[in-house]
Amino acid sequence: MSQRKGLVMREIRMDEMAQSIDLLNYVFQMSMSIKKDRRFVSEKSRQFNEGHALGWFDGDQLVSQILSLPFQVNIYGVPYEMGGITAIGTYPEYSKQGLMDHLIKETLTIMREEGRYISYLFPFSIPYYRKKGWEIITDIVEFQVKDTQFPHYKEVPGKIRRVNTRDKDVVGIYNRFAERTHGAMIRNTIAWNEKFHEDYWEEKFVDTDVVLQAAVYYDEDDVPQAYMFYRIMEENFYIDEIVYLTEESRKGIWNFVSAHTSMVYNAYGKTTGNEPVAFLLEDSEIIQEVSPYFMARIVDVEKFLERYPFDEPDFHIRFTIRDRLVEWNNGTYDLDSRDGKVTITKVNDVNEDITVHLSVQTLVTMLLGYKRPKYLAKIERITGSTETIEVLENILKVGIPTFIDYF
Image (cartoon, rainbow, N blue to C red):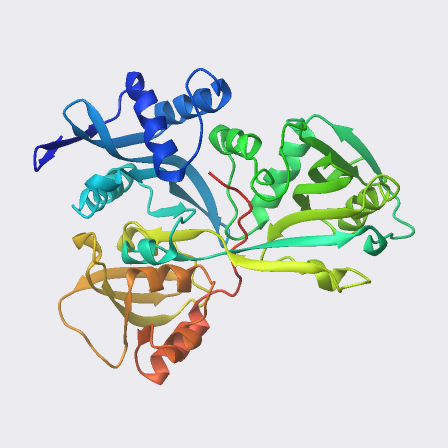
């Protein structure tokens, strides 16, 4: 428990849930209530039990809060424990007192103690979270395809079945997808519950009281290879999520969309920024918009680097890291790799011949592959010799994170 200017920082109790919802309502101008929105409240109650909810209190009044949730993500084939940040908010009259910095630092301390060395969040303000050490690591694509542009692929041997959204085949397909996909959430119960709670299209176009449906593509051996979450509303087809494991199954799931031509005028969808939706369609003149999506932060640089799968077995390099918020990440890290075994030592001296200088937020976007070292050097986000930047290019794997979840 911490104190500051008459305020006390502590865990938020379950019997203070109404205050937490009131704070979210005020800050984000929502209209949830304990009595009316039982599903939302039930979900938040479950999150409070499964994660860590911290708040600043003025007497008995909650004035600032943060919630962290336990997740896992796949980083180039290595599963990392990840702390997901959500439900952040401070009443305006308590802003600019450093309350959120203290909440974030305490939350990162808890993550570090639990072995969660990376954190993800969906930003309400990218500049704000950059100052706290997070950086963009993935994009989202929103697209609109007219019914006249729906693809139809011939000689696709499998079949489609409509199933329950929580069907074991849906879960199985996603698990296989997450195992092979860099950046993806390895969904636990919390992540699946968040997926079904998400009302992405509500703010975009329509009221989402229409029930979410699922369709699964099975190949000719009856093996499930793709699924789609979707809604049909107001003569439009809304795609919440497409996951496919083979090119055949991608074609099969899009044939399912095409089968609705007589029912809808447009298909609206969202997917990862890595998915070339327009390019894969015969008529590529669709409407699509690419936007930054999730941000990430390294919680503990040394522990994160110890598990990171570098792409070369032998190298020697140093990182000098700046972190404005947590002191334990600041310093110079010597990485010496021999036959694929990396030894990491925190050193006091800086050998400029083998050292790159960068912030903790630049480090995460570089290590996760969203931006490459040469580009980051070009825009002056990292500094180091030309030879050292070339070493970085060679030892870091290629691949932009794929993240299709929300929390």
